[in-house]
Length: 436
Image 1 (cartoon, rainbow, N blue to C red):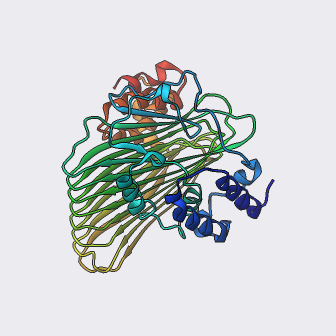
Image 2 (cartoon, rainbow, N blue to C red; image 1 turned 90 degrees about the vertical axis):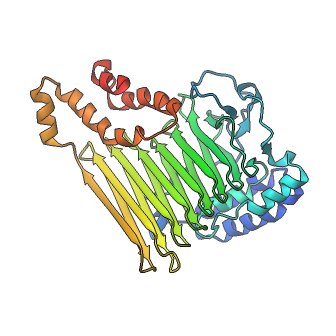
Image 3 (cartoon, one colour; image 1 turned 30 degrees about the horizontal axis):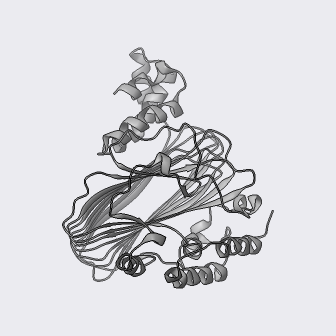
């Protein structure tokens, strides 16, 4: 096992191996400095208290992942979209569709696009608070810009598939996406993290930045459905301007290490955030969602709901924080986290937080932890439903309310049979889930 210092230096060595555009040099240097100077998290670090990073140190990751020319059989969403497929962080053109003009690779950006990237890249991210965002900046050799000009509505969703495959040696892959919607633009972005069925030995560090301009609307989905040995640390950072709307949905299965941060800032009056999330760790997996919503200005709204079903000996962490700044009067914000433990060995650490410095706001937060409802179990069994099927129905029903709110039908159709398979391998047990 490498020490934390060795791992930090090893990651910098990897960053130094990359060829990057000269105009990204300042971003890379700032990221490298922040990463190098950061204290490695341990159990005394509040934001990493329940999610140890020993798996990263144990595996090493002394090389970059390869695999852009991979050919295989992985089922994607059946969605009419502009699709980009990345295998171990590298674009696979054969599996991707033709790029629309408003999607460009960083190293192929025009001078105007370079200026746009320079203006926004990293602007929504606090490198002191988000350690692996600093690593992402240090490695910012490549990435993708999705830019919509004012009043433009995207003709199709942008669908990004990040596929992981095992390498001969543990390897690291990086994902970087910058979305900039100008005034009154409208778009839908789907980020789909998936892997082959083989045992994985990779580490994915992903960073998505969303800049939603005045009156713009963005629907964002993030699905983490990788094999349980893959290590993944990721973040979604968003700035919302006047009357902007961001509606987001996150779903994650656990792994040896899976941590996803959402950090959203209301920077313009009248902005709205709707954020729903579902996490489903099982076996001995871990998953950790940290969300922070900052209300910096008045008259903004947040509606955040996360639900988790933790099975077997799995462990989940949810830390949701809403910070109401002193000028953010007339804020409406609600945060809810509900958890269902289906095993006596399952564990959840949940911490919803409200930090309020304004006096004219309406806010609420809460968390629950429960087990399957015995009364409901008895009711179903008294009407001829087997105990096993009743457990499946009640478990799935716990998250179904959030799944039904997913507006993209292709995602619902994709998820429903896969989630059903998590709850029961027998088709008879999952017949109501798949077909309802």
